[in-house]
Each structure stands twice: as C-alpha cells, then as structure tokens.
Length: 137
Figure 1 (cartoon, rainbow, N blue to C red):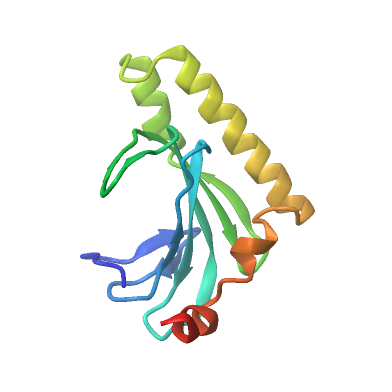
Figure 2 (figure 1 turned 180 degrees about the vertical axis):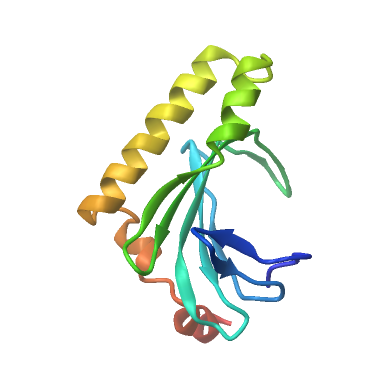
C-alpha cells in the first residue's frame, strides 16, 4: 500500500491515496517504471510512469536516478506529462546531463504517444490488476 502523507493529485483529482494499493513494475533495462494507482477503496485510477535511469539490480540493492518527468495515463483516457517544471529546473541547474535529459524527453514522448494509441501500457502490465495480485498471494 502507498505510504503517503497526502494524496497524489493529477488534473485536480486524487489518483493515489494514503494506504491505497499500488502495483509497481520495475525493469532493469528501461528508462521508466510503472505504477498502477488506486484509491484507498481499491478503485483503479490509472498508470503512472516515472522516467528514470535503468535500474541496476544487485541482489536486494537497487540503484537508479529519477529524471523528474512522469507520464500519467488515467483510467478515464486522460494522458498527461507531469513535473515539467521540476525537469526544467534539474536541466537548468545541471543536475542532469544532456544525454539523460534527451533520453527522458524522448522516453516520455514515446510513452505518451503509445498511451494515446492504446499500445502502452503493455499487455503484461494491464493483466496484473488487484484481483490477480490477490490471487497470486
């Protein structure tokens, strides 16, 4: 469940609430990870992608760097690029090199386009809903 002090809000709507269930997909070879967000009552609200460096997994120690941009693909069909101000500040202040910034921009744009055309998230992500997670435990 989400350990939050306050809800995550996108377009004026709560999309993840404290103690709400979250399903997270992390990949060692991709420049993003994906969270399936819910309200505290279990209502699915959408997919949240963090743009980040590929996760380096060494046993139970993982390393990655958040590249500030996030993509939201709501259950209502709304697709948004989030945290653009944070990204711009990180680039401007030199906290992120130009290579990572370029990859972050491209990755976010690709995910948004794929969300709009329905090819993202992929089937393996869409198939793991709360019911399936509960069955697997």
